[in-house]
Image 1 (cartoon, rainbow over the protein chains, first blue to last red):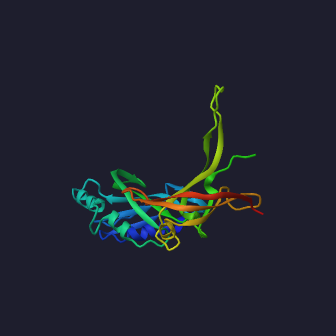
Image 2 (cartoon, rainbow over the protein chains, first blue to last red; image 1 turned 135 degrees about the horizontal axis):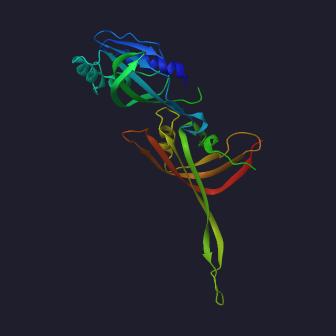
Image 3 (cartoon, rainbow over the protein chains, first blue to last red; image 1 turned 180 degrees about the vertical axis):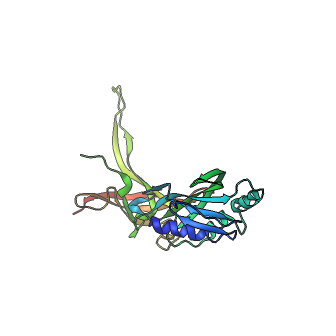
Length: 140
Length: 133
């Protein structure tokens, strides 16, 4: 799998979320989320595990997606964040990623999500972190 | 002399290469044991007899036409040729060729993991070891 292409396609899948989401790939120096939405960051993968099968048949990638919601103390942040964290729905990160037809890998599973206030480039946000498991051919 | 890793193993069943879908395999050879102990002995005396063997392989399920389900499930109950290269392909590396009954094919579907498969074979006749040129 081409890690750059996989990261880009994860960003494409996340962009299908309807709640306005501005998607970034890699390590942007700052983010500019929509006022009533979130910034989504697809960072570099956590890890690549090689040799899931003989002959370089399969590798797996551990990948995160971060959502940064501005004005973390606003009362409606809870509603917006939980809509992104829902298992189904127009804003569901899990549903959008797992419904995507993947080209750069064989499949993606959204394993878990957790949440905490974070600072990014000195700006406070309410953050969500989604952990993805990605599998695909290892020899290409 | 050097320790060898299993990741380079290659396996072909009935001329279909299942290497990319496999992540485990085991080849067993054993002999019948005949007790030839006679009076006056303090210990059992045994002699070997007919040899037999078993082969198992397994890995990650693939839904393609060349995948393990498409290849192996139709072969259950038939005797096929298995070619196993425990160290992969290369000059001087070993190849093991044997006929085997495809005895059992199993698929396992965990809720939080990859679908896996396993196939059990019974060796039929001898395993012929060769060295790749």
